[in-house]
Amino acid sequence: MQLDTVLSALSDPVRRQIVGQLANASIDQACSAFQLPISKSTSTYHFRVLREAGLIKQRYSGTTILNTLRAADIEVRFPGLLRAVLQAARSETAVATSEVQ
Amino acid sequence: MQLDTVLSALSDPVRRQIVGQLANASIDQACSAFQLPISKSTSTYHFRVLREAGLIKQRYSGTTILNTLRAADIEVRFPGLLRAVLQAARSETAVATSEVQ
Image (tube, rainbow over all chains, first blue to last red; front, side, top):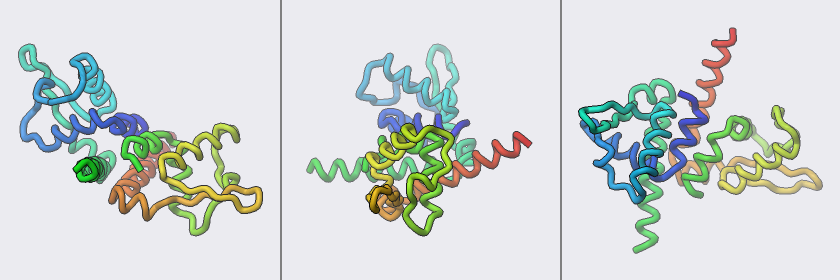
């Protein structure tokens, strides 16, 4: 797990949305469980970027791909990083929402 | 200051080196104060990326450009993020160094 690749993977809002949802999920999530504002092929690309950065694991269950956040591995490698990024993402979303209102 | 741009700016090791040196500096740093393994024009590019992401301020003192980290602004906007990234960078450098030895 390389910091360059991890930060680059997290620099995209769709990928942060995926990571955020996985961080809150108690079970593995199918790709179809994510309401992403993009096409299926673009979504597949984003999941691949996250997997190649080491942030998520993917496994087949029948024909469904299930996604898991590698939260513990990330925390060991880069303590506090994921929490800070997800908190920053939430605060940015909150600011954007309040500006729209 | 946008999270996308900030994370993208911090995803480069040279830019993290600049930010790390500024974080440890008690006074503004001239561009020439950084021992970067790159050409002057590439270095100018990296400083510009950091400035445009809102991470640093640049000002002229005579013909010298002085750089300051916007640490307080970053902390207000994205609490804990810069600290986590710089800590991750140090831990990655430490691992890389111990692997070389």
